[in-house]
Amino acid sequence: MSEPRTFRDEPVSFVRRSGRMSEAQERAFEELAPHYLLDVPRDVAWTSVHPEARLDPASEYGREAPLIVEVGSGQGHAIVHAASSRPDDDFLAVEVFRAGLARTMLDADKAGARNLRLVEANAPEVLSSYLPAGAASEVWIFFPDPWHKKRHTKRRLVRPGFPQTAARALAVGGMLRLATDWEDYALQMREVLDEAPEFERAFEGEWAERFDGRVMTAFERKGIAKGRDIRDLAYRRVQ
Image (tube, rainbow, N blue to C red; front, side, top):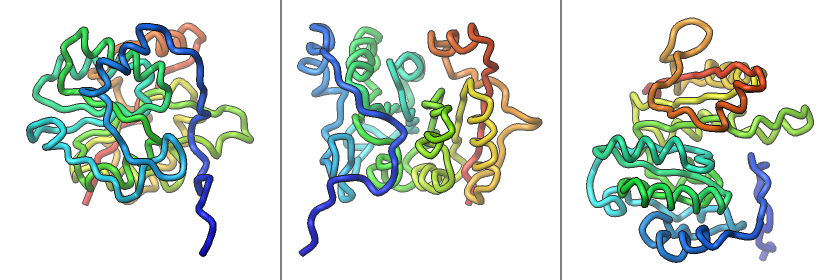
């Protein structure tokens, strides 16, 4: 019998960091996680998803509604704002950093965003197996880690192979929305998605208009302050 695997087959787009949680963050996990944080069966790593694990959105959210998934939700500013202002839609935040998850739960509770759930997991595993096929009406990827050093670009989330993963989770006609403040990553995203038969451009010209559903965050302001242009992309899932 072969030995069990201890590492993933593909590089992940993050480096797991741990730090001391504040009292408020600890309280978020103790008091708010039962409602907001999904309990995901694991595979080979703490942020992995067991290949047989499946989310039942109707059961989890208590209804059938459009599901919007944000990959790399960070501190949760964008998705909490969206969830609290769009009560008829359901939202799923995918994040691996516990401090960000805690902040998201605290802000969601304060805003009364009960239509939001969080999953602490590697995003490609969520998209490729945990979500039912075609479950998402939109997938958002806003300001993913650019891994700007040349030797690290293989870690970028949006690389060859990723469109097929995202397409599986999206319903036909669903939208994949992206934004970055790194020009070379924006160019890579556009090249990879333009070549994907599962998607078609949902914009004209070089770049998409700024998605009006994306709230301005401190992260975006920081990029602008450093003189970096924000570039949006939008692609529609096709048959």
